[in-house]
Length: 281
Image 1 (tube, rainbow, N blue to C red):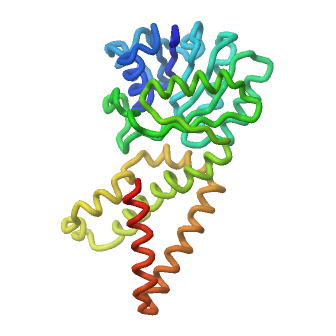
Image 2 (image 1 turned 30 degrees about the vertical axis):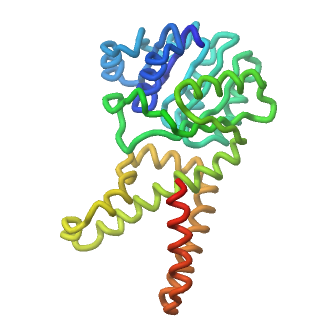
Image 3 (image 1 turned 135 degrees about the vertical axis):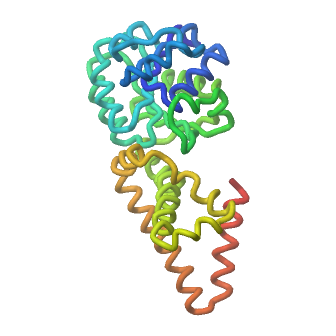
């Protein structure tokens, strides 16, 4: 499918993607770069990496697909940094959890260059971080959202869609703005709820955690995600996240009111709606 794929940022997602590409034979070569020297040293001994470069500008030379797998606030600055090394027909994408700002700024960065940028968000991952937790099947049967701008070329969308499909993902296409609205509700809000619940419980009697069952662990697993990474995600999508919080607050208020009023029908109605939604996931 590709002669050479460059993966910039071989953490959990980047390394898992490299593994999947190699396992499925989707590129002749996979090359990488990491900001930290110790991470570059680890890549040297990995079967999924053919070459490790000391600079991102060198790593993208000759690649027909470049995947930016770094934290969301670094994606656009990294694109600026590699612009001069990009091939004329290169396709650039990312795995960031926010899209509106990234896609608009990427278009500006590449103005006057014939390389193409198309945002992507593979909805896969883990609360764990780092290439040591990478898995070649991380993306299988998960959703991938492509976020083309209005003037995106049909062949670019088709090519990147075919790539993520070959990785094992179910691909859909929405605008960057719609993407940010959706993930604020189905990804960012759930993380906030898990983290806030843990923060609330941390202020209670410390012995309670010894009595918690699997329900609490299952509900709050994602709260173990890197706070610095999540800070960036939430700040970049703050408008949509705030709207999602407000909507959730309204639902919580309805449930609180039903409990105060001993409205059994109201309580059961909300619990049944929740069960129905969860059973369909």
